Amino acid sequence: MCNCGAKGQETTPAPTNAPTNAPPIATAAPTVVTAAQTTGTTSRTLCADLEDAKFNCQDYNNHYGLCASLTPTLQTIARTRCPKFCNLCVNGTAPTQSTLTGTTTLPPCSDHDNRCSQPSYRNLLCNPNALPDTKKYAIETCPLTCNYCTEYYATVTCNICGDLADKIPCSQSLVLKNITTTTTCPSSQQYCMTDVLQDSYGNTDIFKRCVDETTCRTKWLTESADQDYCSKYDVKNPNAFECHFCCHGDYCNTGIKPKDSVLV
Image 1: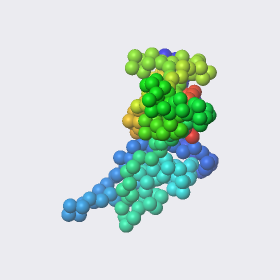
Image 2: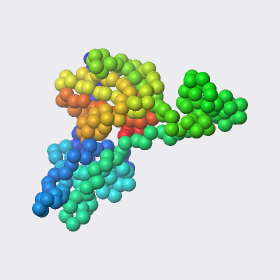
Image 3: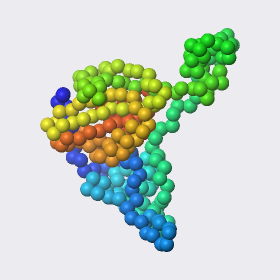
């Protein structure tokens, strides 16, 4: 294991002086209903905030402008964790929408070569009787021109290193220098992940890989995103912890923590 323990400021966010344009923090999957009232056979969710030692609605509002934010991720936090504080309840009942926001839509069907629109190129690639390899290339390169959008396999290129299953970490020095192998992920894995595992001695292992949407939601949105030591990585944490950063976009998992703009 390499010794690259987290460092930096305290874990508690500044309640009043933090910048209001700070990047948003993604939220855990919305299992945030705190109480229910039953009348006959009808059950409704009471208006209540879900706060704990690690999460405070007032702090998040001071730090990120939670209640007034137009960012989907912050709107999810407001709706699921702070409906009362943000005055989102209707007739004493918390919002019932449970759709998880913050996930990134897959890339649209588009051409990836300027030559696709050239007649000679189009006639060669878009021929319905083309060889399988030619059609595969057309689907991946000129799906819009060739009308192959329904067969378009949108892919993402991720940095990969280490082997999480076998506990073989990336080289820390190469990660810090952004020198890693890249790969085009399979169509079933449209997200990039960086796993950071720190033990109780401050030793940190890093892994980079392609993941599917379920893994992205579980490891990042559910298990990591609402933890200060992950969402604001580099805050001091002497304890053992795991952060699983999930992002979407080519090479988005560069470095240790991806940019907030590409985190799902």
